[in-house]
Image (cartoon, rainbow, N blue to C red; front, side):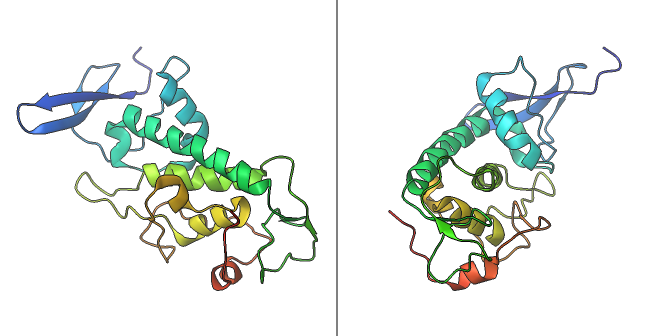
Length: 213
């Protein structure tokens, strides 16, 4: 076992009258640490069911440190509830939407289709919608931290929220029940920047969007 990398798992310690204090336990050495602002460990195939599903959906989108590392089971359970709700709502909305053939963007009034044509409702949820939901839901539940005392922001970056609208025809507020979308792309969690896009999010933000009910 000496060559194994330490694996962090969730453990909870209930203090008398002081609420719940969380800590990480190293499965190899058995050592405990109160440090929570670390890159989360999503477990393996033998992990609890909520961690297995969460690993499939969120691990690739959480390469940063988050205080939720000390609350993985509960955080993942909550995240997967929201993910399933988001997928169901997106599929319902998409079944009533027209979508641009060029970039899978919803054909909202006043938003360019980038040379493509608006077509009838898609048969399945697009990959771009799925990626937007994964980035949004996982970022919402795993806010980035810089230390055990400092979380950069509990808000999602503007581009992340706009992509959920653009490709899924829903809002993050509808999924989580709380509008934590920032109006900026810095000092926030889950910035979608860096990926090439076939549409202008600035135009989408400027347009008056009415999410199709």
